[in-house]
Length: 300
Image 1 (cartoon, helix red, strand yellow):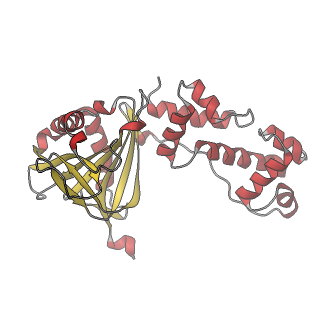
Image 2 (image 1 turned 90 degrees about the vertical axis):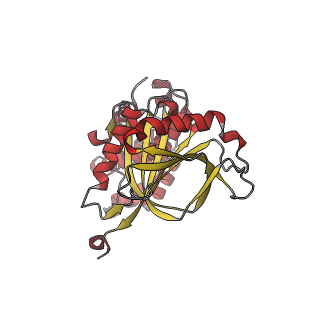
Image 3 (image 1 turned 30 degrees about the vertical axis):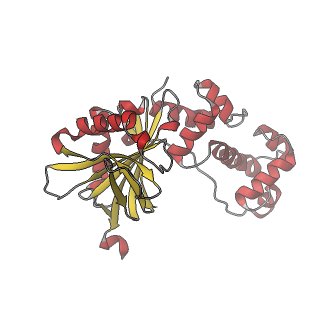
């Protein structure tokens, strides 16, 4: 099974090279020994759009060249790009560009087409791929779990161990869990100069009431955040020191990027989110969030 970077890169190349050959998500999934549903989820997680919609947009974008630079009739162009009927091509074209193929030929209007997606080497991880950051608003949420004090030098080793211990042995006793298959690892930094953090493996809960006294609780307040998305070729239990270290190195390049327009508040609070149901036996997914605030130069 391919590494995530290679898998996604191959899928993007395959779409472009087979744009006239009826390529679709099912064909791609079978070629790379995935279920179609899981390929759809991976593609959406990585690129924030549906693979079927992306393929359709790329077919329509490619067809524009035939419309404007050949005398081929619309039916033949439609069939060339995998549309069963001329009218289905015309309807899709109008939804995409706001005018019909015939109107485009007559008017020569400038239209905006979807360019091909690309992966960049800086996204590549040892056994995964990292996307981001996206700037998002995270609404307030509550969590219940088991908090540990962890020395910074040992955090990349001890935090995964604490996460597995909580997930395997303690999370099922937390009442009123929201999305009980979703793990949240919340880190709070008591002081920017501290040599330790408080790490809390947890699940989201509807309310902090009625949480058993042996569990810790916390609230993440509504925040503007930087979100990074990671896909790895391993079980989510395999998020070890080496993988976490490579991820933090990549995230650190954003933290210290003066041109980003944002400052990341990593010295206060951050959290990772893992939907364990998204693991298909080969690829896992993880999201990582930290509050940010806009710099004055970005605001002016």
